[in-house]
Length: 438
Image 1 (cartoon, rainbow, N blue to C red):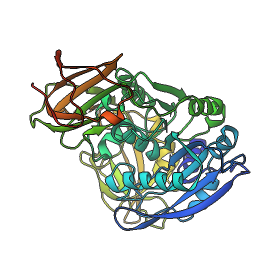
Image 2 (cartoon, rainbow, N blue to C red):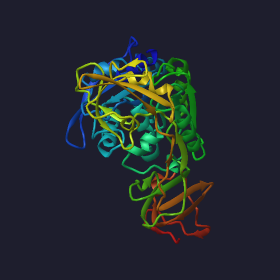
Image 3 (cartoon, rainbow, N blue to C red):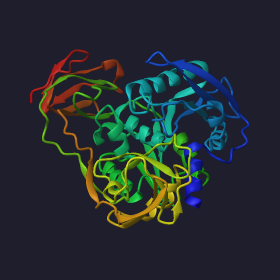
């Protein structure tokens, strides 16, 4: 039951709130879909209007909920990041998303950017030290933004998130090259019932093959942030030591769903055929899953089955829509979090037992969970790739599938006198399309 209590606390907000000494401001922003949504700003106790300080934008979990959080200010006040903000003297900003305005879609992404801009205009923020952080769905959203929309940030924090979720829910294709060496600090936990650490670790280690500035730790905890205080100085130092800068090197992998501009480089056109480039990593999902969704409008004891996923293990065992699950093994189903007292201790293909209520009759079903399955991350092939690097006064570009691109001279970090394209020395032409022979 301890793990269930921790999980509930992590999903609905921190139980023990830090006694803040700073100030909260609750505001609203009109989003891309013309709907007004709230956000909350926290300025630390030592904030001064004439001194620019870092800012951390924090993305909450459970962002697919149809409803906004009922009390945004209360949610922000419970954050255990506030103590870090006071100790590290940085601002916190809390956007609030919901279904169709998530951290993985265009409306949610635009909302984050608008909130950042509005906060920077009103408060004294160091624009070279803006960070994006998140927990659970928020952490998965951080990973999505890290690989698709990272140019305005100095760095990222992803706590108990999943690259697999980021790829599944995201509107834009994810390629491991596209973070362009932005620093990211990732923590996942050994007892997480949602994201098994063996699967997460393999995906992050694969990402590290492409991105040298990925910092990754595992902590002995459930799906929560109980480790945050022990990591507080590292997090504060990460914020102090990282600043946004104009890159000397840009890597981009592109398809029709990927943004085609990054800092001083814009891709104007590329071929429509896929390149034979494989970024994927294969991962074994050995997580026990009954493959069922619940009817949370049901007010009685237990969990009422609303529907089954394809190839559901519980349906194979004989369960039907409308059945009420009273117990999984010996664990009573008291609320939507109760399954996490049973499922994390099982693996794929393990024996399973549930007690159901059907037409006022108790039924015990026995069977097995489905076998482990393989899935992959970063399995989309790009249409084009480009690598641009500045060495001394040389700009060296190699590309495949790119038909034309532009270099924005005013955004370059230094003056360029030599331009080499696909191993050929060329005249440096800026701010106009450059044709790329493939």
